[in-house]
Length: 262
Image (cartoon, rainbow, N blue to C red; front, side):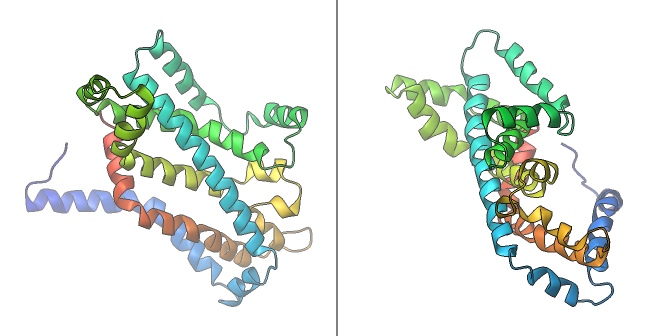
């Protein structure tokens, strides 16, 4: 791992990291600054005056939590199987799973729409939760498998010698050791599920089911396009993600660094 030992090296590293951070920070600063343009705090007041705003937050929370549960359960089981179980053609299945990373959401929109209408999922949470989870699982399995590869096989063998079943070994030994990567998976999945705009826009026509990412539509119409209030709505919708990241920051960074290396 790269380590800056001298003061000059640390200063150079700080400059490089700062320069690399600017392109990501600038849009956030511009969004917050733009949200105060015009009438200032009244832009946020207009957002909070939307009567259905608590309902939209509840819908986003339900969608995000459901996606997290599906992704977490499937990811941990799949990563454990790919990492610790002796499965025939295991690597073939793993690379087939990773091939799904090449499929963007917009390309799958038409087949997903046909599937949702055929199965009767259209205009329900399932029409959004299942595709979002499926799109996340290949990447999260990649991270979790690399993390589980670092768990000594001797722990699992010792548990089996003591009489524990594979399910008990997975539940009592593997899962507690994977909390860092689990935190990273939860944060990444939360960000994706909370921010998704396209799938709810297409599959959720009932206003009582729509998430908070569709709130900016209240300020965009044929005769009105108030970008300052749109930016204010974007800031409000991002607050839960920021809180979640700050709460899980240490585990998130530890999980990503460990999951990226074998």
